[in-house]
Length: 480
Image (cartoon, rainbow, N blue to C red; front, side, top):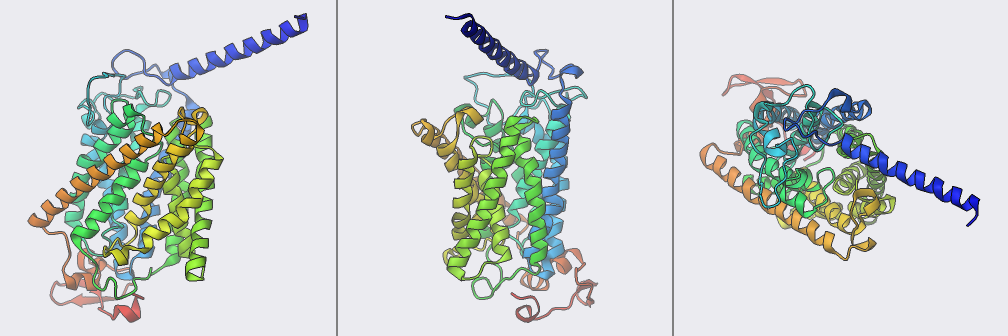
């Protein structure tokens, strides 16, 4: 062997060693030190990662307020706009309080590395109740390069938007007080166990290797299934199946969808919990899948209805965002394209058959979020690539084992969310009641519940002594 060849081999060996040392340093940098207190020295925190995660917190919170509030608000009838926005706002405040008290600890405790192969952990322990033990330099085992306070707040934004999505299932007809009670109980009994199972190292689905990068099971399937159950338990809106319930302001829905699209980059790419290559790939796959899904929904609508609509493309945006969520940190551009291509017609089908099946999922919480989450969770079992997310799907030599785990994880989330949601709703219905009166529903929830309207045309309600909208013929005035 010539001296030149030996020099080349030596250079390659040095480069390989440097790469190994860099990866080892990165793992150590993101790990929690073994002090047992969940604290790390200040110099172990990465300012770039922290800056990105601070930005992601703002982006994901923006998805709920104002994003989801005006997205849903544009799709309801004009007499329910404020009530719909009020639901998103109230849930954001309520879940923040519950996250402080119980939610974070039930979902993500212990913060230190505590792993027992034989110990089953349905929820987190009590070590972070009221965030006790979280100090300015604390870090979490899942995010060792950022302060735990940032990680906690980032996960809080996920906990906020998940129950807010459920509101799409029962829009226009649920009482305000029972709604808040349901969301609070649901957060503790449904969201926290599913989040712990999928995302905490002690969670049983995480241990089984279930791939859910940013919330296919945790956010979309859980909320979509709960939305379907609530729609069935509460019952249909008056006129469902015989009247058209048109959005009162499609431009408002368009604006909300744009907020959601931009915020979703923090939702998906932020779930890498670092400003690294995987975050960049999640960003790219999110954009690809979303754009392709919007186009495929529009083309599906064009073939079936002969007219492409703004609302259709907007719905395709959400379908693509939802479907790529569990897969964005595991697939490449080809997988993202296929997911987006299928998401449009798949979610269009489920959103279109609710009248035939007889359930009133008013704003397609189930038709887009649950079904989109299921599609993405299934396809990640086919298109996952080891060099991106650490494991292969069936199309890259896995043999179908990952697909089995994905189906198991999705069925677990569906069963738990559906069953527990049903029990909570029935208990509240028997004790407090879930649905507003027929008169209040006709008048609109803005006036009947909150005593205010978006139209600014008040009339003295003689029976209740408060201002409300003058009752009109909804078929003529509000396009329903």
